[in-house]
Length: 602
Ligand code: FAD
Image 1 (spheres, protein in one colour):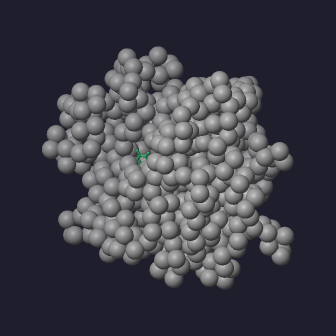
Image 2 (cartoon, rainbow, N blue to C red):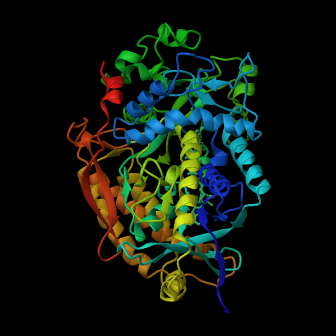
Image 3 (spheres, rainbow, N blue to C red):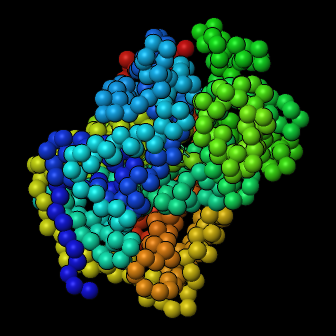
């Protein structure tokens, strides 16, 4: 190979989902020379799959709505483990960021008065999700991409970043100096020299067997951050969405949007019972309808009625479904029924939920305007991610930023639906602004050639051995382990078993073999991603074992309730001394100021 291709930028954004695109636009607007790098084609990021909408307290349908109510809902949804300042900034700035998308050409659905329409979702007191039918993410990506292209921002697509590069500073703490990666098609290496990297790589749901996530979500950003010396928080908290398809097997896990319930759909067990009324937790009792009559009235009159229990936060609904199936009241394919056919007209369903209509018709041969759907929980969202400063989204590594699903803190132990899309644009803008300012005052450092060599060796390692296992077998065993032992309901002994299996996967990975050469070689791509997936899985399993309580997206059979002591602290994950696993430490949550505390005094 000749010399490695090299480029210099003020800011490199890794990831072309909503958060990465918004960050790149902000950094460009702040005067930085920016590039976006993404491992799939532009437009294929996870964000494009988002259906329901973006939560923002615009008050278009309910003038009573405001940032304070949104802030309170978000904190309660996350069972108070959220970083309060992130939750506050998010609630305050989301409306402005949504309006800005409209200015840039996004065509939101409208209210009768011509305002941006807002739809109901679980855990939100008022109808709050700005949406475009059930294809909101598509419109968000389309709008941001169009702007990115119009601004002339460079895009490197089908290009995977495998290592971050660093340089020493006078103060002792190494800062970001660049990123190392390869073109997926040719297998050729590429180096970006830059003082500022924004990680916007999304989640890691592909570590579970049943998941709504696509092949890309292997936790690359989480692992890159750890290896660069940054810390992760909330890793034990994983969101299992209550409604994924369960049949046919080829689509098991594929998401069924929460909008089905927001628009009137109800959950029933095999006995035809609307079972959610039997699963209302004490914490949400005061704000949840306890009769079918009140629940049904709520859709028309939200002021005088309480929300149906089908719209409790996702962790509650997923656990309830799990319990019904376990008790023998599941459907033939091991789920429960989601019924909108008996509750809304076919016209209404086709207008509000066009993608769901087609998804079931084409993939399962089910007409959702006539029959109920069969659904069950599916791994969906990572609350855990890089620990960042709430104002700038910078990690503890100078020059390393993180946004979107790749960062932690904002959603605490459980994210409310719709709060991710708004999170992407609020913190995407903040990170882009901050990274550009940082780059302007810090200049481009030089990368060490030894580090580049090391990154190259590590990427090529899977070609070195012959006769070893292929990465697909190891990935499949890892997914099964996370599914069985680190799933919705966890237990100490099972988590210990998971951690010990992860140790054996490490040995298997060290012996793995990839056939063929570097031109488009999916086995090699997986081999590289698998290392990240495994490191992140270890972080989840160890944090889940350490947190001896149940809270949000972390449920322990052996510690069934929340513990006020644990409610005051985070588990912070960092790379261990050998650089092959993770360490944990406890850290107190930042103290919420009194003027915000008052929202939680009942
Ligand atoms: P993503 O959109 O996930 O993009 C990640 C980017 O990083 C991609 O471009 C990828 O190629 C790139 N990348 C990853 N690793 C590398 C690497 N090593 N090198 C280079 N590039 C890399 N949230 C809501 O708020 N409302 C909804 O209605 C909603 N519906 C959803 C429906 C589905 C089916 C799913 C799966 C999720 C939904 N979510 C929803 C969640 C939300 O869509 C995601 O959390 C969000 O889109 C994540 O955006 P992101 O910018 O963090 O990253």
